Image (cartoon, rainbow, N blue to C red; front, side, top):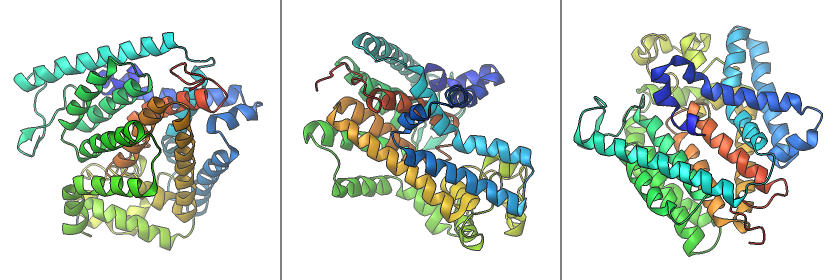
Length: 399
């Protein structure tokens, strides 16, 4: 978990660290291979067979589209497929690394480590605000965004969100002030997703600990409305003011056109909106005239090929793949909701992580990038403790 939190700074030391998230996913693959005869184990990972079925449908539909249309070579398809499922493989790895119950000793150790990580971030934050040690960072809202030694402020925001998640899941009273400090630093990255995540955390904590209950539909709608208001300036700029003109707007609207034109299976993996589709300029882009759009005309000059998530799902796997993917996320949410009656701290922390991914998926390939593996591992650990008959993480078996 620590390695995944600091992966971005490590990459700048040695490029081999850029494969940490892929290694996590590969370990998930190894777990499946080693336990291929134990279907009940895989069933426990996802808590029910429906997720395995939906994930299989999603993969099969994408590969079927590749087979029918043959827009990209098999090597690109395999690489893109791996990226598209590595979040789920990270969940498997997280489930497999704790083969026993987590006791108070484990909770205290993990909590202490996360507090030390938070303290390190705070020291670096103070250095950043008083010096130019970390070089240039983007100016937003008239102030300098917090980036530290991360490649981009969005990676730092995700890392801080991961630390906050762990501090809540493995909660001790000492953690509260660090959760507040980390949230403030996350906001200082000045990303719309950070503002939305901070509001989401406050609302989640209020509902769970003050109202002592689970989320109702009207509360979820209010939370979604608040998130929309926070991110409205960015959303309106790309999708209203520049509707059909900006690269992001064009990628989204074209993905919906692909869903219609290639109904119901899409164009296949590595063909649209993903990194592989941009790096190895997809024939689908040529078909839809992207070569005439400056920001999307080729992989060396284009800059907005892979900074969205849902167009990947819409375009590459069509209506069937989209329904399957959303179905998996819905099942995950329902499983998370059941944790509330067992442990409110774990429920609050893992729900925050899940909502952070959903918020991030609006403006970046959240479930496909490196930080998604961190949240996947955490989700797997929590599922291990709550979906296979174990006591909860804080050791309160009778709570």
